[in-house]
Image 1 (cartoon, rainbow, N blue to C red):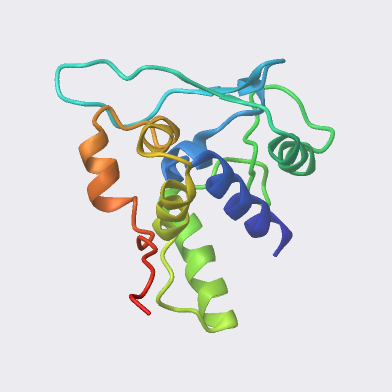
Image 2 (image 1 turned 120 degrees about the horizontal axis):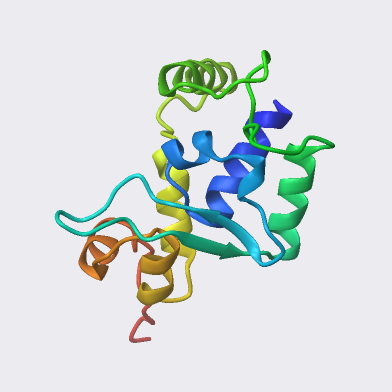
Length: 151
């Protein structure tokens, strides 16, 4: 479905957690990009707001998802116009996975792909809003290292 496709593209481009994406409001957009506060933070440290700067592709996804709507509405609304709960979104995602035959794909895999495709560990850590690069390196930087054979 178009909405699910836009959600997946948004998650890949931003590395945003599912819960942040589902809670994202149209009012989060500004001229510089989209601001959100990650739902997870390190113990005893406040969550720091993140500004994701616009790219042409990100702006395009935003415009397609937002349409003509403005204000504090969800970027990705349910059919009734409200916010998706985690359960309702997972139900939608699981039905779609079964329909296309990729039942072993989790939504979190899109976030992992964003971290893996980032140019560097530091870029991936920033994109994924991790406070420590060790988590990023251990769980998200999964592309194999290219090596050349001897002959």
